[in-house]
Length: 229
Image (cartoon, rainbow, N blue to C red; front, side, top):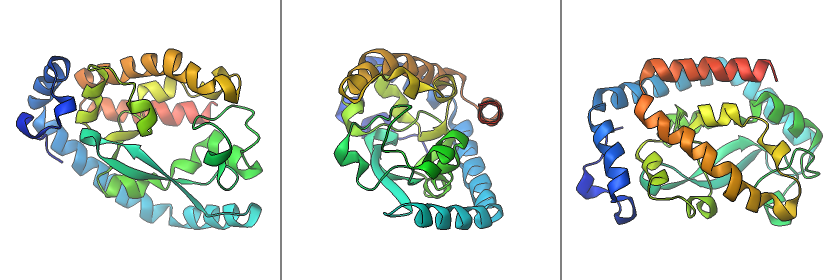
């Protein structure tokens, strides 16, 4: 994973606010390479160690509700590229077609086993494959669907200079985000106007603080947050 030359960035990323963060990251090229080496190595090891759990959860999802084992959704990552994020399916089949893209705490689309997977964040384990493929990192801005990326300000677009992440300070802070979404009718509006701007401020600040040690601290914070949830 290398930082692209400024001239090679998409036109919608070439603005003064993104340039500020681009210059910051240009001085952290070694950290960016180290981040990729760490991501690939750890995700590969975890995939091997956790394979029995992955197989068990796959069978559990399949046995308790109809539909595919994995949930795939197109998200946006580095430089605005799209990819299919992988999760264990926690909702009923075709849930995207019968409700909003965001999920409420009492969402009746969530399956019984899905509630447990979400609470423990075990549904995120298949993203180890996304990390190995270079589409994601352990730490970084949580990847959004294109609908919400379209609301990014010029400054917010700077977060697309690094890969999307499984966790971040924003996702730790908003671990109970679904409780703030009152109904399906207002969920998307609340997310765009109230939650997204705050989350993106955390994500922008990450660009300034980012290095491997900081990533490790956020990974540990995430584990603690999941245990204490």
